[in-house]
Length: 260
Image 1 (cartoon, helix red, strand yellow):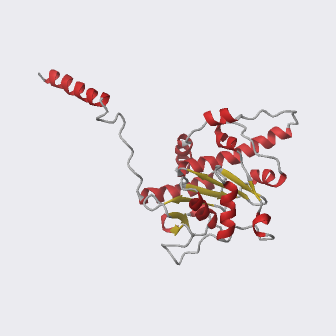
Image 2: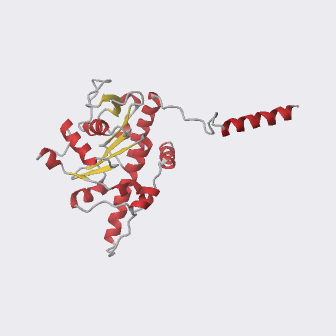
Image 3: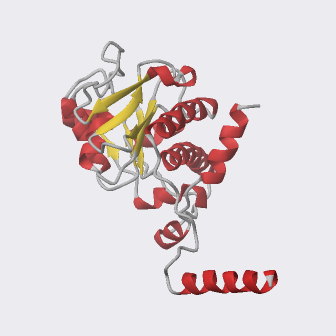
């Protein structure tokens, strides 16, 4: 009798799945604020540990409960960020929590990208040395390998002199932040002459991966150019599109390395 009941129950479940009354996969719960902030602290540590950020640069994430707010650490070295350092900002980059905390001068990069791109959930600003030659030389960054798939969209270059004349190279005003967001457009990354890059993505894990592989791709392209070959074979547009991924395995490994 017990076996017959079990078989009936299984048949009922499969029938409901086929009819669409049950989902074959349990939906992931929506991220809560505490989880997002914990992940943001981890993202800071990963990017510092993997030499994407050093004492400078920053990573932010849009609020999961208010799309008009985002979270970013107070000014300081990313590798030392703690939960207590996280500040909530509005999209004009004014603090709405921890008002006494000194903010990053260049927080306007984040606020203006979020303002211009509702699809974007996380932003990184880095000073990766490998991208600077491409930002300064006019040689376009090209996708060298499948892990740099997003580079196949094209990586524009932001020229601060066109937006603000002679400056200290920092994005210290909303108007300069808007100019960076305009240069980024619908792409995933923009290089900044004499400065670094800004990377934007639809998740925090994705933007961490893109930041790492942007830097690696630049290094690989420079190495190929040094070899002096007549032709470097880059990924074409279709290959780049087909190679898209979420970098979750990379995130898990980088997080594991932090704990060793």
